[in-house]
Image 1 (cartoon, rainbow, N blue to C red):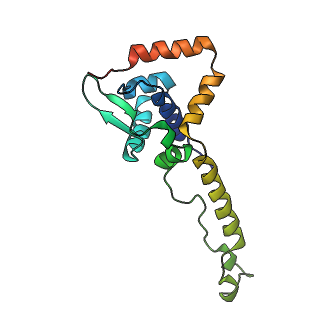
Image 2 (image 1 turned 90 degrees about the vertical axis):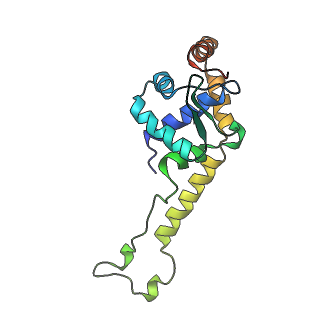
Image 3 (image 1 turned 180 degrees about the vertical axis):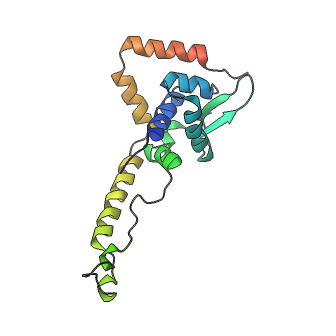
Length: 165
């Protein structure tokens, strides 16, 4: 299964938003700058996250994006589904019926074993992503970042985030 870069950007965005103090927000431009990605492309991911109810946008002086839900209620599957959608990656076209040795309708009365294998694999993939809460991602980033980087991140947030009125 191919996961687009938009999912990566969205996951990093949600991880950053998860560490904001309550009520604080970051603009789309600030988020794009932080990630080093083009603002128009990140805007698409932010729109998808907003439609899915993962982030909320507020206009005005103290505006910007913030998580719409508590980070412990969000998973990597939520982010992936918001950006990529929930349609199955594999779609069986019943190719087993094609060609000179195609299967008869009677032989196709049950599910195709190949399609069934892909469906099991995709279900496992989705379950694995659903088992990764956003809080685990935040903890992993915090664990892997050196103290100086954590300080730079904190300073960057202080400089770029809008605070509630």
